[in-house]
Image (cartoon, rainbow, N blue to C red; front, side, top):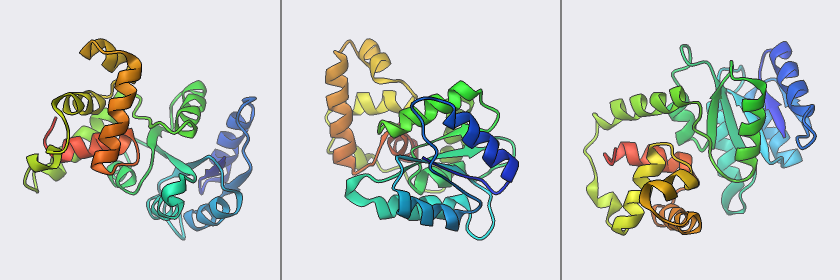
Amino acid sequence: MIVADDQAMVRDGIATLLDAAPDIDVVAQAANGREAVGLAREHRPDVVVMDVRMPVMDGLAATREITEAAGADGGPRVLVLTTFDLDEYVYEALGAGASGFLLKDAPVEDLRAAVRVVAAGDALLAPSVTRRLIADIAKRRRERIHARPQAFADLTPRETDVLRQIARGLSNAEIAEELFLAEQTVKTHVGRVLTKLDLRDRTQAVVFAYENGLI
C-alpha cells in the first residue's frame, strides 16, 4: 500500500503504524497527490491511504485519477483520511471514487482494520460520525436537485430494501438479521444492486441512495 500526506511526520507515523502489522506492507510514500498518482501507477498497490489537503495536486483530484485509471480491473482502492471539523470535501472524495474514509484521530487498530476492509474490495463508512457527515452533505446536495425515483426502477423490492440498509451503514450480517435472510443471499443482492446501478462499491451505493431520496 501507499501513504500520501504532505506532512512528513504524519506520513511517516501512519506508514510506520501500518507497516508494523504483519499483513500490511507499505511500499511507498507520497508528499502530494501528483506523487501518489505516479506511485500508484508504478507499484499498483491494493490501497492508497490519501490525505485530502496537499500541494501540487490535492487528494480529491488524485483519488479521481487513480480510480478512473483503475477501470474494470479494479486497481488500487483509496481510503481517505480526513479531519471532521476542517475538511469540507468528504462527499466529493466519495464521488471521486474513494472506497471510504476515516478520521485522522481514529485508533490505530481502526486504521489497520479500515485498510483491510478496503483491500478486500469492500467499503468503509465508520465511525458513525462519518456516516452522519455523508448524510448531511448528501442531504444538502439533494435539496438542490429533483429526486429521481426512476433511478430505482430496475431494482426489485427486495434489492431496494437491501440498498436502504446499505445506506444505513449496515454490514451484510446485520442486513441478513434485519431482513430475515441468509447472509449469502444478502451478498448476492448487494452484487446485483451494484451491477444494476453501475456502482463500484457500497460507499457509492450510500451516496446514490441519499442523492436520490431513498433515505
